Image (cartoon, rainbow, N blue to C red; front, side, top):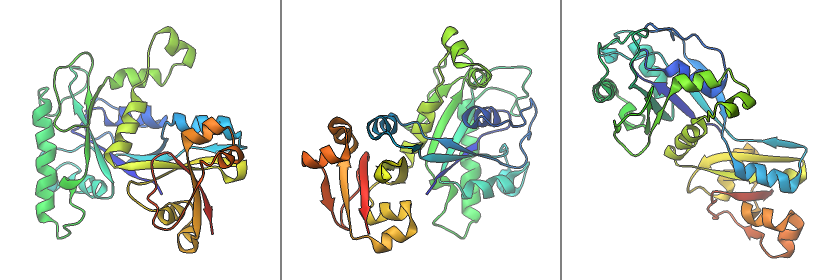
Length: 294
């Protein structure tokens, strides 16, 4: 099961620059509107120190992180709900995403055209909000409303900014720096004291969707992280691993990842009494390591 984040914003806000930095995929980036016509889609690994520590303990043949999907969508303009610019295509693509990552231009650069004529983050945010709401008013489907999707605001800065985006989930990141780091080696980044903020952004996307991570160790062959919505049961988690697991679920053995690491092995965790046998009504917790019995 994977979840998708739609990267949106006005033209030339930095959406494609962010997408390239996140996914390490080459994309068209230009100082003019609508460089992105067809959406770019990229799969990004969710950074997870817990998975690394579990793998150090289990020493599996394979380690597989969980993922999140990012979609770089064409720039929105005023009137998009009526089809202005690439509006209808843009809004249809957002509808298929689980959350919205809105890139807001806070940087000045005469070389990059500003379609609104001035730097005004509050106005840009309001423009997109209004376009989503107007499109929702036309929709007959009331369960997948664009204006109800969770939103993370990314302020694309080129220095310090005092502007605060609405809502709890917002970050200020210099995407130009992130794009430059894409071209550097780890040694060069260390020498220049440059550290990416993208891991923090990925985790914010994960959090805003109210997701948790659980793990499987598959007899020591593969240590793997999985994503699911918070508040679901052990059979639901089984269904994430394999569709048959949900229907055939009998019970599961569960241990907290920290307890497993502390014990040093599944066998030792069992001997210490830290492995719990659970049934169909068990609510999976973030950080659970689960072995399914079917």
